[in-house]
Length: 485
Image (cartoon, rainbow, N blue to C red; front, side):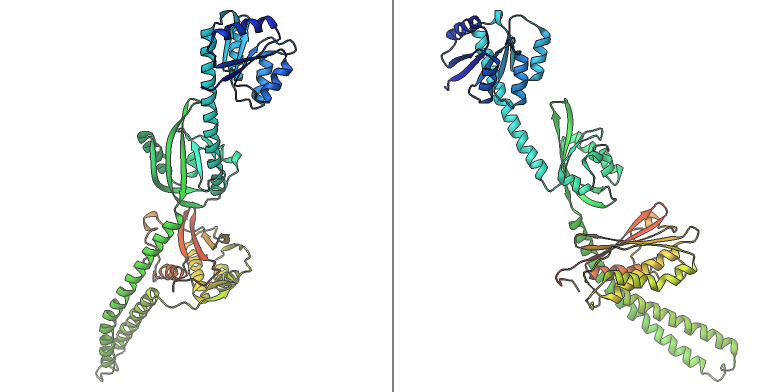
C-alpha cells in the first residue's frame, strides 16, 4: 500500500507534538511532516508535495480559512482538513463551503478519528478528481461537437447550448439563454409531445420534428435526449442532441416528386391519345356538317358549329399543355447570371404590376458567379410564380416582395404577396395538375414550375404568411456539371 504523506501546517510546536503522538498510534502507512508558517504551508500546497494537509485555523499572519481559500483558488486538488481549538459552527460551515474535506476539533481528535477523516478525505478527493476529469471530457465533446447539443429542463428553461447549436439556430449565447426551448420548435405540439415522451421514458431516440432558427429557417431534425439529475441544483435537465435531417428529407421529397412526375407523364400521354382520337372525329364531322348545302346559309347553325369547333380547339390546346407540363425534357444547360434572369422575369411582369397598382419590393443579393441553368425555363418559372402573386391580390394594399439569399450551395429566391393566401387543406396539392382556385385558370403553372426546378435538382416550397403567401425557389449552385436531366 502506498505511503500517504501528511503535512501539518501549524505555528504552535506543542500542537505539532500532540498531533505527532496521535499519528504514532495510527497505521505506519502515514508519513507525517510539519511546517510552522502560513507562507511555508501555501508554498508546499502550490508545489503539490503532499497527499493531505492538516491546517490549523489560527496561523498568526493569516487564518486557516485564508490559506484554504488561496489553495482552492490556485487549483489545489489534495484534501485540506481544518483544525481548530474549539468548535465553531460558523467556521465549520465556511470551511465546507470553500472546499475543506473535513473540520476537526483538536480536543476531540484521537487516532481512530484522525485515521478515518484522512481516509474519507482522500477517497472524496479521488472521487472529485474523477468527476472533474469526466466533466472536462464531456465539456470538450460538448463544445467541439458539430451537431447542436441543448441542455434544458421540463419547464423549457435553457441551461446551456454548445457552439454548434448557436451556429445552427443563429442566436448569440446571451439571446438564446433568455428564451424558452419552445422557441426553437416550429410547432408547439411537437415540444409538448417531446417533453411528455421524455418524462415518461427517461430517454428519447430519433424524435423527428421541425425546428426553426432565429432567422425563421425551418429544418427537419431528429432529437435524441435523456434526463440527467443536476446534483448541484438538485434538478433534472434534458440533454438533447439535434441532427439536421433536411438533406435526407429533401432527397426523399425529390424521389417522390420524380416518381409522381414519371407517373403523371405516362398518364398524360395515354389520356392525350384517348382524347385526341374522338376530338379528331368530332372536328371531321363538324367540317362535313358545315359544308352541307342545306345548312351553309343557316347563320344560326353555322354559329353553333363555330362554337363547337372553338371549344374542340380549346380542349386540344388544354391536352397539349397538360402533356407539355408533364414531359421530362432535356435541359439546355448554360452558365447565366441568376440576378439578370430574375430581373428579366420582373421586367416581363412589371407593366401588369403597375396596372394593378402593386408595390414591388426588390432585394436581390448580387452573385457574380454564373449558375448552370436552362434560362428560358427558369425565367418562365419565375414569371409563373409572380403572375400567381399578382392574381392572388384583390384588395389594397397590394405588395409583392422579391428577395434572394445565398445559403451554402443554394441560391434561394423568395416571392411573397399580400393576397388571399392558400387554405391549409390545399397546401399539399397546389402542385397537382389542373388544381386551381381561380376562374379561367388552367392549373398547370405550379405543376410545370415544380417539374422544371426538380430537373434542375432544385425545389419550390410554399409557406403561408399571416397575410398572403410565400414561395421559396431554390436553385443549386453547381461548381461541377452534375445534374439529373
